[in-house]
Image (tube, rainbow, N blue to C red; front, side):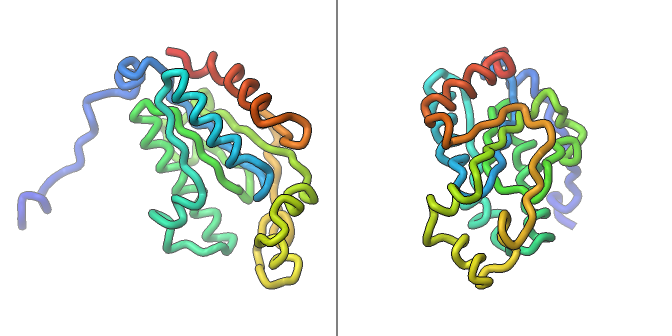
Length: 199
């Protein structure tokens, strides 16, 4: 048996609060959820840049990047998408422990409960943002996307059409990209977030 096989996992002696103090911010998970084409990814990208410009350390976990990486073995069945959400939550937990503002941008089948990810996540660290952009608008924005395949029964288990989308009951922030511009929404999000993330 090698020394690596005998090794035991040791928890870091550096606490999250120490990392937050070093970075000058409080770690928060900003969880965007909405249908494809709702504008959530665009807004999340703009928010990440705005936070960085203001001196905060933020990182965005986006669907495409995760699916091509750690979740590349998952498909789009209900079970796989539920597993995808849980894995993303656990990845986000690691960023929170590092003191980083974490932006997750995903389509979720049901409301995400951060407390299921781990005992270290609490509701004070969780900001849920939902876009209520109407399905028709989402489809119009992506006329050649998977929406069309879902309508033609070429794509099964597509959220919003062939698979249900459970809207969270009590989101922290509700947005609608058909009623407010991206710059307006960015400012509203920054205003809501700053009291939560300032050290």
